[in-house]
Image (cartoon, rainbow, N blue to C red; front, top):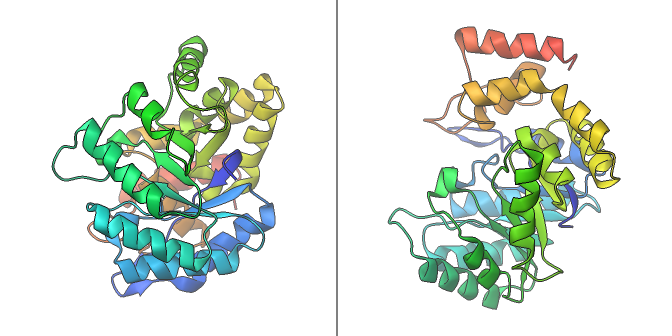
Length: 297
């Protein structure tokens, strides 16, 4: 479950609620492609904007639509009390694993983050993936803290931030962390732009925004890298440079991939929770040009 391609779909919604049929359709697309796991209610799934009831509903829809593909459910929240409730909801929905980021308003200490994970792990009967995403949580894990948390019994994977584009530097980064965590804890790369580099450098999995909408493309990169064909993996990633450029220019992957999904008709517009908005005007025209350039239809 925590190796290969973990595809993270959008949670299409408007201010009246979740578009359940569209969400289920995205999950069914991933299940049909036979991705290695499906990650719902991550950052791409806009988990922080949803109520507990909405998140429980998304978890149930995902499990019901995923067939035999494992579903990993995001359970991040500000308070440990709330995370414990979300973990219970995810387990009751049939999730195969959970994903936890140390969400905070006040800046957290290392000991507070460790205690947070420790409390959650005591309540779990399914494995947990540590979500290291300083861009949204504003908490930066040290390798040493990762090593401490990775000793907790339910921890089976660490989703690390993007690695350097320099292959040697990326390999050193993965090597340093690998030396501090148990052998059975996998390392997964996030950040689509450098996913091929991360996989080539020794990461076991790719936690992928791209894979949530274009699973076959992401699977091709993942399988090439894990088979040791670094040249093919990097070539396939390089062919997506027009998309990666959009990511860089428009603040990351969420708005871009949601705009792509709207243009292609996978989701209705609007698809993001206010105040978030997909790209409009000239920016949307640029996305349309990239879709045409990459021959996506």
